[in-house]
Length: 429
Image 1: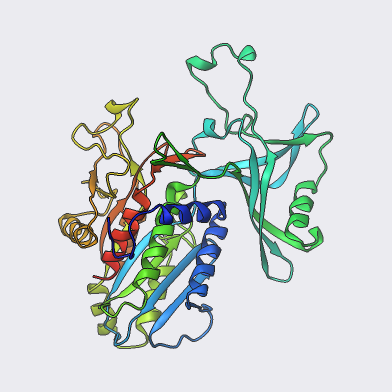
Image 2: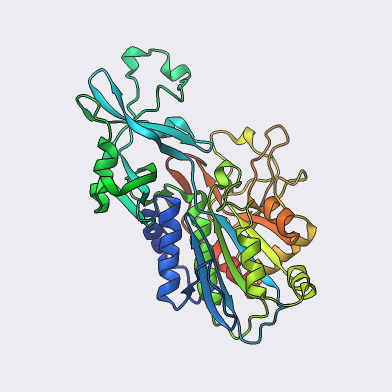
């Protein structure tokens, strides 16, 4: 299948997604790795406290685990509208507490806090690494990855819980604490270890945002390798697709709008932060791109703006088909999905559906519709938040997957590429 990205699907896109996910175990790495790719292709990073100059070309701002990138085409004016792809960089996981060194019964352990809607049992008996960022006393930050088996959350043996297969209940405080060694607890040991891995002195570390990740790399799965098993598909698959679509759109002679990638942090906990979709980061950035023109020009630009909010949705589960709407059964490799909810948990309306259908038609890709069963309410996305904050036409899309919020998720190997193709057609519309 040919798409606007310029080549037939030969797994090249998904191979690159695998590399991106493996290199991005934390939101900070996901944003930094996207910034590195943008820089390599001529995009320029702007400091938020500098005065910005206008003119054509690619630029981006990077703030923690969030990134906003855009490309201004030749001939753009202060009233030129935007085509925005929105996604999020964070995933449910276990995050290190402020006093991390703990333990009991001769074991050294790491105290963790649960982040987002973590599927607890999927973190049991996995080899876990550490990643995140260190804040240094000189005001700088240092990203760190310990990408080897370092921690483990051990499950209780069946001999000590004969009823475990009849239903397992995990206490979030006492049962999810990873082990990482034997011996007495040593205060400051974990931070000292991570600082050494990052190449800095522990005395220079003033703060940290650290989290655990499964060190098993992403892999193709299935008889014909038509599936992809990976951590953090929710939602790095959308960040990566949006990045590929933006880079493909940059420099296109047919651009009539300004293509934008908005990758936010903290979606899994409600988006209310300085780097989340509920904050002013995107709105402030868009207004600065428009420039200091008359308020009417800014209003005209926003009136001519559309947004794709891209996040994963549920593929029909073969072992639990009764949990899905009987008339909406998205399947892997069936193409990206349009997400609909009458109660505005997703922002899609009739106009958004038409916009999405047109983009998929231009890209030559199939698409599917996702609607939750009435008796099982769906989650939400950055879509309604963006629509409310900016007042722009927004539609929720994504790909279908299994095992959402697991430490390791599953999707079709073709869908990431098909999603990126549809995004590119949207950005160039």
